[in-house]
Each structure stands twice: as C-alpha cells, then as structure tokens.
Length: 423
Ligand code: CTP
Image 1: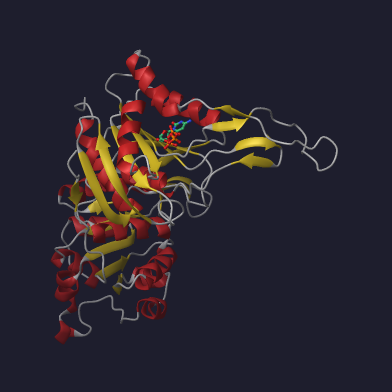
Image 2: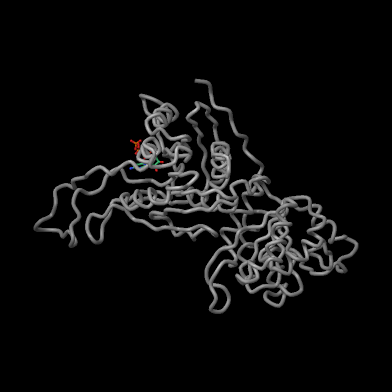
C-alpha cells in the first residue's frame, strides 16, 4: 500500500488577537481568556465597550494583556487604532458578545473602537454570546445571529445553565477554556468552524470506562476524554445536535450546547450509545472501552487477610462498535448511519501501527477509523496528537501533529461527505 497523503501542519505561532469585551456580567470571564491567550505567546489587544468597563476596569485588561486599552476612536489618533487593530489582527474574539453588540455589528455601526475594529477586520471574527435566554431567543437576536453567520462570522452556540440571578437556560457564556480552545483552533485553521453539520444528529462517546471490583475499586484506563470532548464541542459548534456519552474523564467541563449522558461501565456505555444511536446520522466511538470487567462484583470491600483473592477473574465486555455495525447490517440501525471508530495502536515485530490499524478497520467494519500511535507519552492525557484516518473505501490520510481540536476538525471533515443528503 502507498504511504498516506499528509494533511499539512498549520502555522500556530505567535499571533495578533483582538479580544472585544461587551458589557455583560460575563465580562469577568474574559480575563481568564485574555490570560490564556497571552500565556500561549499571542499578542493580545483588549477592546472593551464603555459598558464593559462598568464590569471590569481597564487596569485589569491592561495588566493581563500588557497593552493599552481604549474604548473610543479618539484616543491615540496618530496610530489610527480604529483601522489598524482590525486590519492587523489574525483573529477577533468578542467574549462576551451581548445582544446589543451583535445588533450594532449587524447594522455596520462604527460608534466605538470595537465596532470600528469589526468593520476593518479581514480575519476570522468569533462572537461568543452571553445573555438571558429571552434575549438569545428573541427574533431580533435570532435574525442578527443569522446575518452575522451569513456574512462569514462565527457565532458560537452559548452554553445552557445558570445565568445571572436565579434564571437558567441557553445564553450562558461558555467557559474560558472552551473559548480558548475554539480561538486556538481558528488560529491553527481559519476555516475550522463552518456550520456544515446543522440539522445533523451525532452521538459521540468519550473517556474511559470503569469496571467495578468492589464498592471502592475499579479497573480503569488512562483515557482523559479530551479527544471525544473536542469532537463533541466542535460538532456542536458546526451546528450538529450532539449527544456525548461520557465515561470517566479528567475534570473536563461539559462542552457548550451538547447533551451529556454520564456512564461508568462499558455495559452502561453500550446501552446509552445503542439508545441514542437510533435516528442518529453518525456515531463516533472515541471512548476507551474496557475489553474486560471483573467477573464478580464484591458487594462489600475486599479486605486483606481472610478471604483475600489470589487473582481477579475477568469476563469479556461486548464490543460496542462492532455491535453498532451489526445493528446497521440487521436493520436495527439505519443503513445510512455513519460509524466511526478509534484505534490506539502500538507496532511490534509482527507489524507496524498501520498494519494493525488496517486489520482493525476490516475487523470492526466501521466507515472510518481514527488511528493514534500510543506509547512514549503520545495520545493519552496530552493536548496534542497525530495519527491517520483510514476509510472503508481504502483511502488513508496521515494527520500531522496538532491540537486535539484540530484532529477533531479533520475527523468531522472526513465524516461530513459520508453523511446521507440532509432531509
Ligand atoms: N470499542 C468498543 N467496545 C469495546 C472495545 C472497544 O466499542 N468493548 C471501540 C472503541 O471505542 C474504539 C474501537 O473499538 O472506537 C477500537 O478500540 P480498541 O481498544 O483499539 O480495539 P479493540 O477491539 O479492543 O482491539 P485491541 O485488541 O487492539 O484492544
């Protein structure tokens, strides 16, 4: 077989990022975003609105970004900041973006430095909305969001949950880590957030399973869930309706606009995936499912001394991925459901990683297999990865080293043309 084509590594070095901050209570969260961006080596200019400064003072923004902060177009006039900041930026992120700011952006106003910057920016512009649910769902905001998206801006799906006061609902600012992940992805790849999965339903499994031995012990694995969470986050931001079946993960926040179903064991994961797969356009099994579980569960803690077991007997868990393929073959699942598997492989004297991965793709019968070489600190518990994408039609693509978000975007790109035509 020929060597796979390499999907080129993007430039993710030091970049110029404008962080716009509009006047909402979530403005305080922009501080963590600014810090994360500057700590990654980017050159950050913060442009708040006047009302944002009611919530966070300019001294905070200046200290965090290491740059001066202005709100109007008449400060520092010889530098023409109202034109240059936008022109020179590699990315503009507005977090929080209030209903008012998005309305002003939609009408093309330039009555402060932030809106003027939006008119001159030619780089990706990402609005991260935060407002009360009523404001988010108001037809004026809905139309403004649609207009901004139609013009090529990214408008992030907000999170649901506790808003200011006692309210809950959609409209919460996603956590700073999540905004940072999306911003970093756009710096790696400017076209990473199209709305090409709108109207699609995806089920994604993530994390490791825990197989209980007694009330306090379990057999687990080192999966952090980061890759599956990155996939779920991105699929939702590309417009999909996403159910994330999450096993044990390393303290990750729920991705915004994703339904999270929590499970512990492989059996629970199998049941949840099978239930939610019905009617889904695609199922992505990125979870590290335990192949075996203890044959018996001790209902009280196994103690040292009398009754101490010499060994732990194991029994095999069902293969969820292979089960999905069987359900598709016997008609329980739609023939059009796309099934994606993951493989963490090591090579040995009998074969290299790709040889084993090709055999796994054939054995599992899925449509796509995402392959990661493991060992030497690769794949598990880290933020970056590389690997290959093998498709059932025999095509193979090497995925150059990049963030797990970038890997996720490539997996979704490969999945997208396999989906049935939208109804
Ligand atoms: N998988 C699954 N159910 C299992 C085990 C694995 O659905 N009981 C899925 C994983 O989510 C992944 C794929 O199968 O998408 C491959 O997992 P991997 O552990 O690499 O494969 P195994 O079939 O367990 O093969 P190996 O013998 O190499 O461990």
